[in-house]
Length: 219
Ligand code: TYD
Image (cartoon, rainbow, N blue to C red):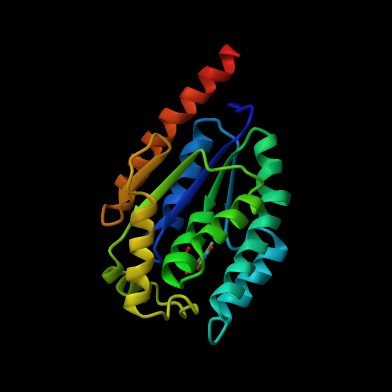
């Protein structure tokens, strides 16, 4: 088993319908094959309390006011971090989170106008200062969101019923957040085939994991 002393936290971000969930599952399979301990989880959700918040938000006929909505995501995040993510990281696991704090900056900050500095402060508190070791941004054009969601054939959530302008603002938010290249960021094109996406994401992850494994052996 490959155990990482401080664990390794991966956040997968992007617009609705970008293919994050399929990618997350592919990464888990590959990592387990390579002998890593992995936890796949998501925000909102990932705890029984969080799943209730998730349902509350998804099933809302009308979205609550932006601040109330953000605070619900933040409550989910705080519970998820304390009870699920941090314990798994302490066990040396790779935690893959289908969305994390940047979704709030993009959706509630850029999309709905909640103060981004406030979101940044509360997010940091909810995550107890821990940041993702790698963020994978699956970049999809906002115009493609409705087609992708429609193809799922499922009932739409309160977010998925949003208009194109909202998704354009969210997409701009993600693009702003990830405009500067950095070693712990991997930007992928959502139009690529799922197998190619998984290959590219795994290559980025593998490089960082090996670096961390080497560093921990040298300690
Ligand atoms: P989900 O069904 O997980 O969508 P997806 O499969 O695209 O991730 O629903 C999560 C929805 O919640 C999604 O529309 C994005 C939104 N969201 C926010 O608005 N803010 C947040 O902080 C998070 C985590 C999600």
